[in-house]
Image 1 (tube, helix red, strand yellow):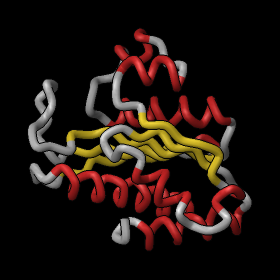
Image 2: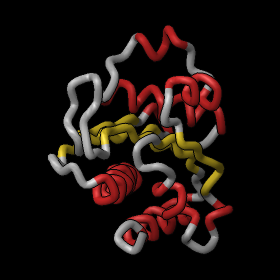
Image 3: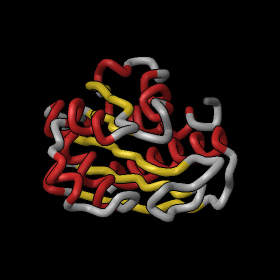
Image 4: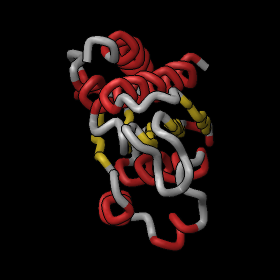
Length: 162
């Protein structure tokens, strides 16, 4: 957690200064993004909620996505991460939303992605959207979880900085 906190503090300070809110939809990071944002004092000013949407059923039930919506984008891609971020932003009516998906390991996915494949997306005001892929090529599940949380927060910090 200590490795994730510095970037979370940076993001939190920017959110508080802007008086903006955020929601988080994460998958393979398992709640680390939310935990890091909530570890910063004053989190209630900006953190509106988050969920771990590890399965298709969770995405359907918690984000309100339909099977058709999920089938319209390839798994493990920026398009899917953006879909999750848009759904989270809409569900919580926040200024911003972060989404993360990936394969933390020790094995890859049934879709052909190897361990260490992470995808992060941020959606914000004025139709701002950004998404990136990170490949660590590592089978270390815990290290990938931390790296994915950091990667998602780094992308968010970049978008907040404008």
